[in-house]
Image (cartoon, rainbow, N blue to C red; front, side, top):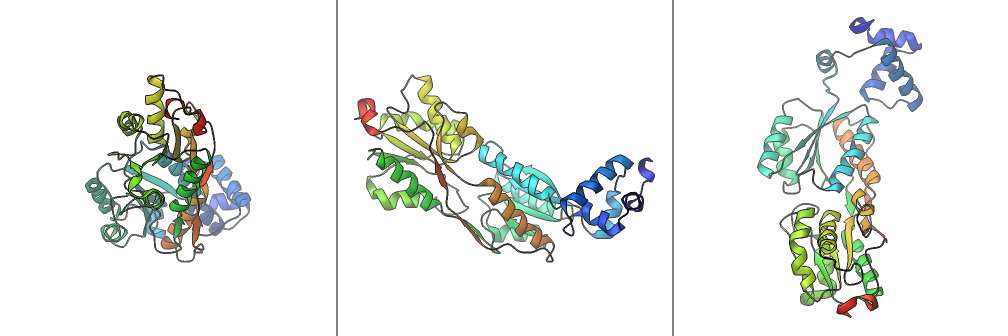
Amino acid sequence: MGNSVTIADVANHLGVSKSTVSHALSGKRRISSAVKRQVLEAVRELGYRPNFAARVMNTHRTGLVGVVVDSLNNPHTTALLEELGRELARYSMQMVLCSAGEVENGRLLLSKFSNGMVDGILNNLPGLAEGEARELAHGVPLITYLRHREAPLTIDFAAGTRQALDYLAGLGHRRIAMIPAERRGGAGEDPCLIAYREQFGDSGLVFRTPAATLQAGLEVAEALFASDATAVLAGNDAVASGLLQWAIARNYPLPERMSVIGHDDSPLASLTFPSLTSLRLPIDVIAAHTVKVLMHAIDREQPVPEPLTIVPELIVRNSCAARTQAGGKV
């Protein structure tokens, strides 16, 4: 039947109304998963292909959400994007993904998204404030990841940090280093670093990196392992993995001489050697909440979720050991 198939043909084939088919395809109204599955199967069987231009003119919707990130090098970001894609699909929405790199390029991308290309925007640029991002969007519904004001999602990074530090202290470690994530949660100092300083004050060992990447971990490793630290809490799993790689390449015994904890519990954490102890963030929960808030911003008839607070959970693997095993650093 090809392109001559209409939405009415799909509705007649299933014995449902055109509005049911339309809502199942557009995500504008909640449709049961069983009915939506039947609609999608009928669409494939009959060869129905929506006319994109006509749909936009009739509904004033594109079915697209623009997502702007700073980089795809962080395993946490890629895992988050997968979950966001799944959640958007529940509303029959698709993602237009852009990796901005520099903040200035991100500003340009947000401006381009504001011309009617997308129904909504998710800003995941740590260096771009919510207020400025909204101005660049020129009225297109926009939320900034972890910094939106409506039904806020709060991650208690400080509580997670204390959990990790208490775990290391329980293993006998007293000289615990910290590698902060400079732009965690947007502008301002890393809340994990603030919690670390509350415990260690000026006696703490803080090693900074220019980026939250595996390469940055490799570059800071020499200074860290030359210090008197016997344990380290890294800003994310990529940096922690760089530390592990540096040590393995030099036959430096881990975790006997250095315990390492990452952050985010990305897919990378279970693939390193030794497997990485890490603070887990429930990406599926975060993505679901984020998409619900964005969909409410796009369509006020969609329910707004309740505010949510998440405390990272320490997932213990093989990258930490008791200080009594810490080789020459005992």
